[in-house]
Image (cartoon, rainbow, N blue to C red; front, side, top):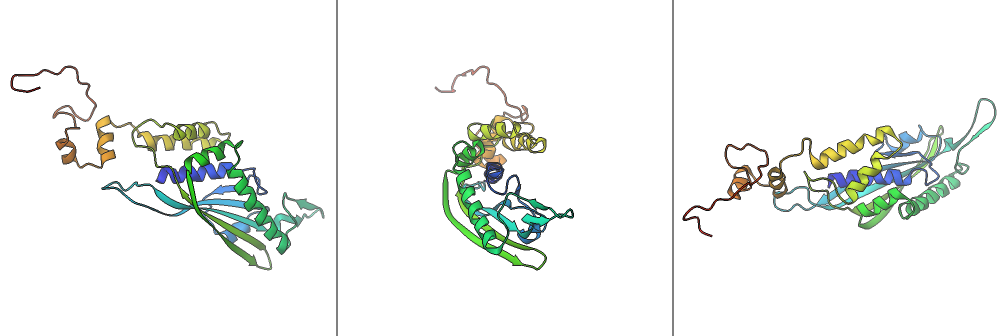
Length: 255
């Protein structure tokens, strides 16, 4: 379910960008801890992560589908409004950062996140809901710091998601996967658009393998098992797909 995790994380970031009090400050898998990140932000921010997950394999297939935790962290800092050298206040789109109002801001942003992911007019949210057919438990955790140089309040929403299964390997993307790639390719961010080629290659392969190799991979067969099931090309024909031109029945062949 690795591609599903990636797709859901990307769709979450795009669905939330510009839809909450955090504005465009929505990041994918921010490496630094929330208290470290708070020191770098002058306004509310959101970070999206795909966290622990568990899946059940079938036979040798280890790509089995299962649930994982989608973590959405919200941070609000006391730097949301500060005094410039000129003596003027820089106003950011957030509430005045007293302790009580920082908590209120977290509550409001959490509400806005829920609304954004359910918004039928939000194309990325529509993709999100197609990639997440079912949501399980939703937990929230609180974080805060009263450091004299920087106060911040944080909230983590941990959403148990049951994702759509990964697309089959070696076949052209279809359905939501085709729509996802189209959305990425049409995005205004040139760096984000580059992800489309990477994801497409992970689905189709580069170069695309012959059909019998795809079948062997999907069934998780060893080389000997593939030969025994007669899905491999005849000896001497190599790996490429071979079209069957004519079948000739000889005496004693039956049928």
